[in-house]
Image (cartoon, rainbow, N blue to C red):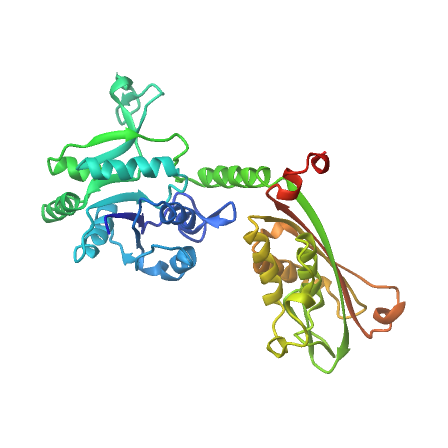
Length: 404
């Protein structure tokens, strides 16, 4: 391989807060790290991507990297950024690339053009880094606060990643720094400078921000969600309805949650009326048939199947059309069991299955005032609606009359 992107993802990111490191927290419904990896693996100039991760994060990393091409097996990082990069470089030693790009996991917005500039610099230079002019006035202050000097900002640059290097030179520089006990250098350009190599610059990007604080995370999430909705102006709504009769059993499945009851629900699958109705609502919004067309009761493989498979399938079909699920609304109709005590659990489970934020899932329950089959406690019914957003459909884009 000629060019490997080495992603530094072993840090704890404590300034962001939360229960998990910042690289695994989500922005726009996707983890920061997955967005970073996805951009690098999709770029034609990058031959492979190697992530350096914390030893405790293997499970979270597997989720972040799942299904992405060009991924190499991750390597465990060290106690410092320098140690982590060196661990990644050492892993490549048996089959060294000509060049490497070293990139921060917490910079998920590097554009294709920026990656292309870095790749070109990796071929042409021993060391090159993306740089932005400093636009604010920069002052030097002492520990007590008084200003000591105002620096000439015309010669100052803010440095970003991905940074581009000749692999052999960077690997040797890291080895020399480690041998000398130097472990406080803040980026790989500094390691090369310490080793005596010239470092050049190429144009960085203002949008290539590094997520450092909780505020950074919130701003990135808000911006991505706004962009995602704006780029999918085709708003569609589908509805679904399902009914299942009571049968033998000691619980019912409602919205993916097992609820104790004196009866079960009869059906070919697990008879989860809530998930069946939601599945039909999504398929209806896609104009893609109904649940029976995709999971026919005549097919023995679906006998006793867990209905979360059906809803996840429909949600994946929305994403396959580059769509977003904007809202899911489920109404459960029965005299018993009581849904209220389980409402929050059902909302959470539906959100998990469909891959949407909890705030985009509504669950309600009602009775029929003792009327009809539900009133006679013979079964449960469910009514659902789903709102999705898709990129402008070809049939609308090509038909001015329908667009009006």
